[in-house]
Length: 338
Image 1 (cartoon, rainbow, N blue to C red):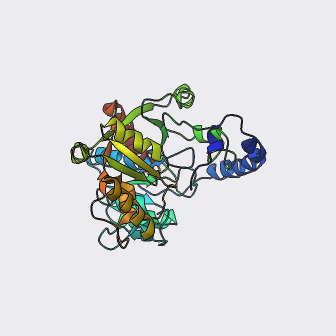
Image 2 (cartoon, one colour; image 1 turned 45 degrees about the vertical axis):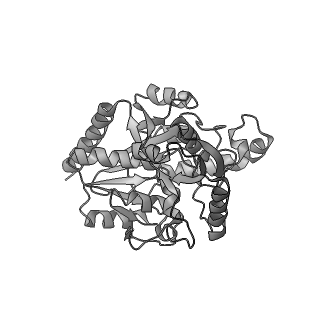
Image 3 (spheres, one colour; image 1 turned 90 degrees about the vertical axis):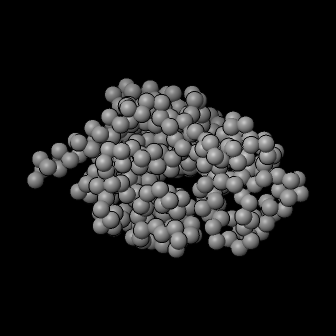
């Protein structure tokens, strides 16, 4: 889905026209969010968004994976497998599965952490526990009421913020902001922008932590592209952010091609990109998530360079304390309930 431009305009006639639908959708979603979910029996940490589209959930999940392992935990990621055809439950196998099977994000994350894909998240919990999980990391699902969360970390791009602040389809929000703020345990702001400062202030006023982080380019990726003019393409929530990251890393971006989030590339599209790159003597570069979707596409060139990034927190010890506290409290609660 490509986000409509009016979502990021404060007084759009289209948004105003769609507001009644947004209010109805928001009321239904808020009511669903209030339901009591199933207790997985082990800690469940959810990484979510207030809004549709991307903001950096996947890098956040991978950063939490590293932290949990440092704490002696065995995390398993639970994903719905958006864009994939398999309902699951199934553990992602990078040798056997493609993005069309289980979605691009699970396929990419499975390189670093076990990933269970399940449309029914309760089935996914059982599968994750069978793999020895001591903690379940939910990739998305903040608004889904079926599974109880021990902590919910919400990710926002600090530059884009929440657009016009209205509920889908009038705006990008998945539910009324108030209902989502009430269920937020921490806010993760990615980048140095100020588009989400008002949301951060509301979270702080509730006594919840605000964590700042930034995407740090992989040194090997930067070195591989140093001195090479590139044609950059991306089908993610915010392709322009990817292009900005390349330029900020000193990469000479000559051409860009944005696609909709989770776009499934056709052989013809990849052939056209390769032809454009050859004609202008450019190197093709894309995100790791996009590269995951290119696996198995007939005729996809071997020379496409994935540009890797890693999320780094400004205050890693604050994050460590936050996660450690939630793990302790969740286990203490379950022990006391016996």
